[in-house]
Length: 330
Image (cartoon, rainbow, N blue to C red; front, side, top):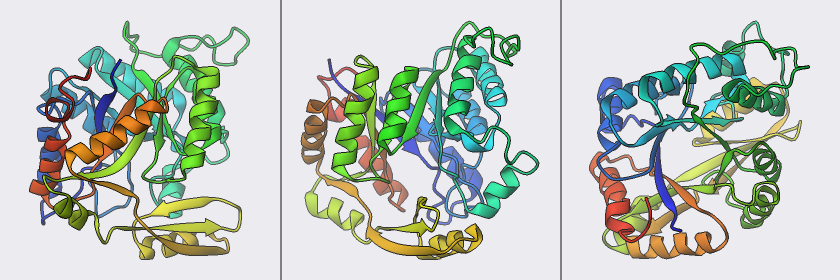
């Protein structure tokens, strides 16, 4: 059995492109390179990416493609009713059939002020993220127990096809819960690069879902020669804001991290880190993937943070299943 390759695209606004041009470029990448899945992310109040509403963009890309699976990477479930999310994706499966991925995550996808606006009037209602996941599974699969307060509630329009539910995270606890629920799990290595946490997450997931699909999402840059790839990867950095409450959030600029800390109303500390980017030639990257595959990882999701459209596209082409893994199931 081989591993699968997929793309997580944040619809970055690069080279002075308009929002409309950026989204069109996102669509152009979606199907022709042979990847299994094409995901779009959720970011709010951002001038750097144009994907604030993944379920809307997913519907558009599904309408423009024929074969590739398309989904959210992910819907930030902490902001939304699981019932409404289930309705949205039932509509999508009725429109597009068995090509819809319902990826969900816990991160806020923006600063505290955006979170406050997104949750306006609903704060404090079902704030347990694991409970939201349980309800989402029950609504999608029509499997809530009879004693559940929502057991008699139907998700309409009914769909004969269920979207695949995928949890995106970066902790052992989230991997374990995904295994218990039977979800595919994608570990966000480009956010949490701690190898031991990844190994522990694989073990926790496989304990509950030995035949489940465990994947890793990388920031990755490929070029025909190693020096060029490393040059594109150089200078990328991330900032982590450590809040007094114990939460840690990852942001891409110092200004955003400082603003997050300020808006949180808590004492905080901001630390700078070099971004963890897997870069090199296709052969070098394939070797790294093979090493992860030996650990039990069966899917890889590529996020390519290059602010140059042609170089970004070339990286995806070099790492595409057709070019990189001709002998691997895709």
